[in-house]
Image (cartoon, rainbow over all chains, first blue to last red; front, side, top):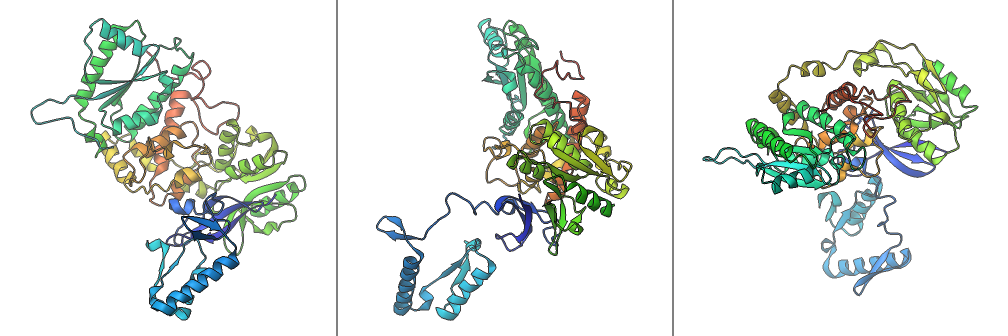
Length: 135
Length: 147
Length: 270
């Protein structure tokens, strides 16, 4: 019987509005604006109010998928990562690092997105980095 | 939903009125007015509902946004509702919505509630005629609602 | 006042399953369910959040549990209206009522800055009720405004609306599972600002007999639309037409779905 509000920052645009995620017994039950946030000051846009809707969305993937033929097949992380690593290495070898692009995501943490761009620049040696918010 | 003006340079303003008519009383009354060849204005666009209590504020507001210069809601007399008390809700709801329209600067006389039974064909004719003239004097809705 | 509240909550937590109140931590202040053994020095009284919907949520999840709430006048009124609509069980709720200060009442233009604990089966009040704050000056000026002036005012205000639905999401009385404002029949999708005056008038009509003037909608609006002016007007209309004041007592059922015998109107019907 635990109810609390967990402070976080909205994942969507660059404004970075403060919001609380209402959590009841470990389950997300809603969102409240952070009334003390110096920028958002207790307001949210429609995306902020619905910032948690993707967490338990029924369309959310549960396993990695590999395209085979016309469709997608469920697979393991090992198989998926191995395939991705081989193919990216292959493309980089043939056509150079700049033939690869990296798209970060609003639904990743800032830290995960940082890692992605670090990987792009330092390992693959390309500056082709962007974010889904700019699509 | 674009709101269109009804006026052209050479014609006078012909208001467009959406009338929500309840199936059991006012719609039948309108029908009887037609059968009896009574003069009812052609400005009326009837929408038959099963009960005037069915008419939600959303529907009335959509009618205005779609270009209705006036909205008429006609139901059974209190005590005669086919569903006993449906029209009681209409009786409470419409005055509140009229007031709200006035609060945001839209003339509340553009919305009218009246009771017309199936036997009151002459009342249907006179209420609609009166209402068309009232709305004509108020001008097109576009002037109050914007584009 | 705050020490009083904490002491009362500590005492009550021995018999209740939890108390809904505001908790301040190192990162911020938000509603929380205090349980026996929690650090009550974290319990604070502001900033104001709508607490009534949280009680409703908890009671539905735990139908046998008994909860308490540290509530201001607005929280209590919201709970009254929710109780009438079967969203809150007043018999399983302990209300630790809190009186707002005169400054707080003025800031909110609040006429009843303390819960009326006479209404509640299980309640007590901390602090003495302050005088009600003066009404919002815009409402007073409203009577003298012409139709054109009102229209210009609201067209300018509603033009700012970004359809965040914050007013609806924060409102304690908005618990409908399917909302008319999300129905594309009435409110067009993908159109900003929403067509005048549909969005706000639908909301105001749906707030008739529900709005308890907690003012959370106006606080949350990113466009600073003075929503409480519109809702104050509908509250007054419902009072004039039906003699009904939301939040005033638990016994009187909401009038709009009642018959005219059960809830007569105060104007003549032809």
